[in-house]
Length: 206
Image 1 (cartoon, rainbow, N blue to C red):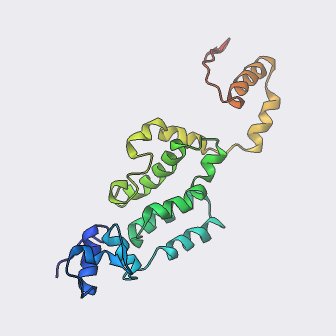
Image 2: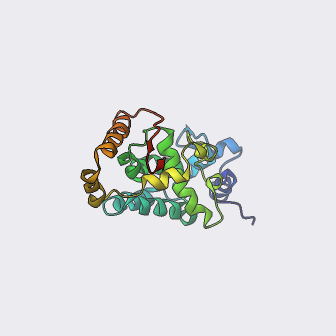
C-alpha cells in the first residue's frame, strides 16, 4: 500500500480504487448515479467516501459571532494546516467577508487589495508552520502572493492602529496654522483623492 498527499488528485483516485469494485476504466470511477464527475475528488465526495467541509464552515461561522477578524485569520489557517478541508476555495468564499471586516472599516477598496490584505495575514501564520499559500488551493484566487507589494505590510500595520478618543480630542488643540493644514489633508482623505502636500514651518519642513 502506497500513501499519497491527501490534497492531491491521486489520493482520491486511491480511495476510489480501494472502494469501487465494478470499475473497468478510470472513467468508470468518475461516474456516480449516471453523473460523470469532472474529478476523482468530486466522485469521492458524491460517493460519501470522505466527509464534507460543513464542520469547518460551521466552526468559522460560529467564530464570526464572537471573534475579531484577526482570530478568524488564525482559525482559517489552522483549518488549512490541520483540518484537511476538501474545498478550500469554497471555505474561503463563504468566510471572506467576515475575515476582511476590519479592512472594510479601514476603507480599503473592495477588490484585490482586500483579498491581498487577508491573504497576507493568513500567510504570516502559515509561515510559522513552514507552509505557504502554494501548499493549498488558494493560489488561483484573483490576487496572489506576487501582488502583495501593492499593499505593503507597513500600510496594513498603520491602518490597524486604533484611533482613540484622546487622539480625536487633540484636534481641538490645534492652532490656526495647524488646523489649516489638518483641514486640507482631511479634504483629500475624505474625497479619496491623491495629493502631494508640502508643509513649511519655523520648526522645520515636514
